Every structure is written in C-alpha cells, then in structure tokens.
Length: 520
Ligand code: C2E
Ligand code: CA
Ligand code: CA
Image 1 (spheres, rainbow, N blue to C red):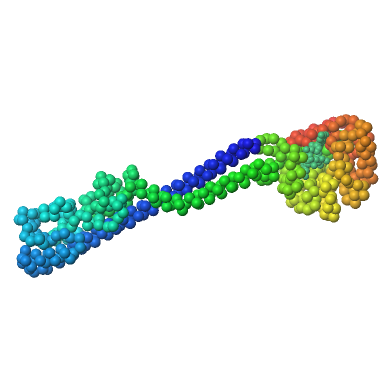
Image 2: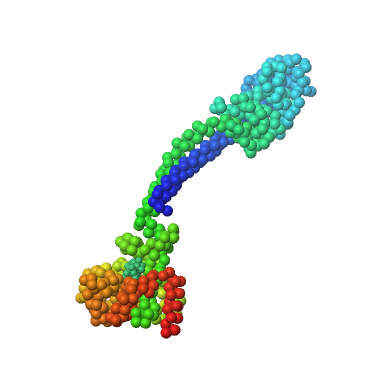
C-alpha cells in the first residue's frame, strides 16, 4: 500500500470505528431503556394483581361476616348491619340478601322482587362464587363484579381491581384467566389487551410496550406507548454517550498510531520483522586459481508484501541505528541454517559468510545466537565466516572480546570493506583476524590509472604479511580476475561469476560448479 492508500484506508477505518462505537452505544442504550421500561411495567402488573387479590379477599371476608348472623332477614337490624359492613369494608359498593337466587333486600333497603342472581363465572377456593361484568339496576351504569356466599352477595365496582396509582400513559387491565375482564385503568385498548392475553409475552404489538403477569387465576396486563422509551433512552444515553465517545476516540487514536506506524519507515521495518519478511540470497565465493566455488556470502533482502525485493543498503542503516538489526541478524542466521544445512553437511569445504553489524560485534550476542542455531545441525563452526566492518571495531576492547571468542569457537572472522574507512595498518595488526575482504572500490581501479590503483597491491601485500586469507569483492571483468590471480589473491566474488542468488539457484550453481570441476 502506498502512502495515499494507507491514509484513505486509515480514514475510512477511523470513520467506521467511530460509527461502530456510536451505533453500539445506541444499540446498548436502546436495549437498556427497553428492559428498564419492561421492568417498570412488570412492577405495575404485579401491583394490579396484588390489588385484585386484596379486593377479593376483603369482599369475601365481608360475606363471611353474615354467615352466623342471627337476625331476621331484611329486618331493620339486618339492613343496618349490611349498611355498616358496606361502609366499613373497603372496595365494596353494596351488600344484598339473595336467598334462593332472588334478591330480597340490600344495604339500601328492600329490593324490587324481580332481580335474579347472575350466572357464576368462577368460584373462589373458599366457596365464594363470582360473576364478572355485571350491571346491576341499582348500581347505575357501572360495570361490577358480584360475589355470592350462601344467602348474601356483595358488589364491587370494576375500577377497584386496577385501582393503583399510575402515570397517565400507562394502562392496566385485570382479567380472569378465562379472559373475563375484571377492571381497567386509563382505558386500555381491549383488542390489544385480549391479543396480549391470548398470545402471551411473545407477541410484538406495534407501537406498544407491555407486560403480562399471571397468578392464581388472574391475569394483569400493563401497556404503555413505545414512545415512552425515548425518555428513558435519553437518560441511558446521557450515561452511555460519553463512554461511546471515549471509545470512538480510543479507536481513532489506535488507528492513528497504527497508520503512523505503517507510514513511518521504522514502523514498516518493525512490521517486516514481525512478519519475518526477510530472505537471504547467496553470492558465490570462488577460488580464483581454480574457479571452484568454496562458499557464499549471505546477503539479506527485504521481500515486501508487494513482491518488491528491497536492497539491504536501504534498510540496514535504519536497522542498525534503531537496534532492530539484532532481529534481522537472527532471521538471517535462521535462514542460513534452514537453506544451507544439507549442503554444508555434505561439503565440509564449503562455507557461508554472514555479515555482522557493529552492534552484533559490540554486544557479542551473535555468538549465543549462532551457538543455538547451529546446535544439532551438523554444521561445523569452521563453515561459518563472520564478516565485520571497521565500524564494528570502534569499541576496540568489546570487539576484541567477541572476535577472540568467535575464533576460539572455530568461526572464521573477516574484515569487510577493508580500506574504505580509516583503518590503519597498526589497527589491523592488533586484531586477531582470519581474512580480509578488499572492497569493490579498489577492485574497480584495477587496470585503470586512477590514483587509488596503486593502493590495491599494497592492501594485498599487507594481507599476505599478516597471513590473512584474501577475498576480492565486486569482480566484474575477466581482466580484474586475471590480475588478482597474478597477485595470488585466494578468493573472489562478483558479477563476473554470479550475482547474489536465491537459495535454490545457489544450490544449483554449486552443483554445476562441482560438476564442471570434475570434468577438468
Ligand atoms: P557487502 O557486505 O559489501 O556486500 C557486497 C555487496 O556488493 C552486495 O550488495 C553484493 O550484491 C554487491 N556485489 C557483489 N558483487 C558485485 C559486483 O560484481 N558488482 C556490483 N556492482 N556489486 C556487487 P548488497 O547485497 O546490496 O548488500 C549491500 C550491503 O548490505 C552489504 O555490503 C552489507 O554491508 C549489507 N548487508 C547485506 N546483507 C546483510 C546482513 O545480513 N547483515 C548486515 N548487517 N548487513 C548486510
Ligand atoms: Ca560483506
Ligand atoms: Ca564488502
């Protein structure tokens, strides 16, 4: 992804993140609001049920008071008694004396002689019979419920069953389990109520929120308009919105951090390391006199997800400055072991040269890394060359420690890019080295009359004096190779022989090189 694509992607992601967080906030607060309202409605239904039960109980109690009363029916005493009970018992409108199903007198006095008992809808456990939805002549137009026990009856106004204090937009209905209406509050739509009672809590009634509660033969339904949720929703949102905004902010921050990481070279490098995107190519090292391949230099490349192979010059300096080079060196070592194990075990004269960074030399940790990586592989330490540049020798005492230990362990140590820094002869003499790599810059001057060309023979002589093996780098022409053979330089590497090759190509190169040697 290029910079622009990353920016667009990050922006879209951030927008999606914010929208997602807010949508989630809305969703959660909506659900909280709905369940808070449903809980409230549940409470109202419970209140209505309690109220109805209480009404039945007190009415039945009033009836039982006449059970053992021994006064003359419809006498003044009897009527007075009925009036007294009517006044002192909550919820009842009237009491009547109704032997044999025909009303004789009420608390108000003698009754007209044609009033019959209403059909019984159900009977309470204590034997009290109940008729629901009756409109007695003396009760005005009111719908009532009448209760009968032995020769007496009481009348209860329907409103009593749902007589609870409620907000005006909450509606209540109390019914018998057979669906007979006992009482309502705030005029609920009976069609809705009946549908709810029939189908239970499962139904969705558009625009309403409700609760149904059933207990001992009674059903209470509480209904309210769905719009009531909005108020509750506002309250929930007041609490949740800051949280939603905070998470949206966190999401945006995370995306900014991640995309910054994507956009900064260092961030990219970290991602590349995490994803192990580094591969190693191998440039053959040739014995100049014979043309035999004696080894290869491991050269790292960064294989970007796009397929592009990034050259080490473009990322090694950043890796060294930031310390990420350790992780890269580790991946190179792993790759070398993986790619070259078999061929190294089969060809003991073959070696692989690994480039070390200044930090690797200074810290000395590379020896631990190598020790672990080579363990049990069959590769001999002698088959691993370690290349260090002069920069690795800045901290001379640390470098000396690492090099000495490396050689004790059997590794071959070479000084790389020799002659390009400030390395002096004295400096070189103080270091226990095995090999010297002459930088391409000096090889380039061979056969030219450039001023530096006079330096090349000196470097070769110097190395010989110090009994170092010599590897000439960057040989591109046969003339350069011929000159180096003439000067008895041992080894060379360069495009004249081969470029750095992917592992399989190098293995192939090596097999062919061996075969060609065998023929001659
Ligand atoms: P170097 O160690 O001096 O590696 C030799 C470089 O010269 C390589 O470049 C190689 O491909 C190139 N080369 C070889 N023969 C010829 C030739 O005939 N003509 C020309 N023009 N170039 C030739 P490369 O692979 O791009 O590596 C560049 C530098 O990156 C290396 O220089 C080394 O300093 C560093 N490097 C490569 N791999 C690693 C590694 O694994 N770790 C560390 N720390 N540094 C590495
Ligand atoms: Ca090198
Ligand atoms: Ca070099």
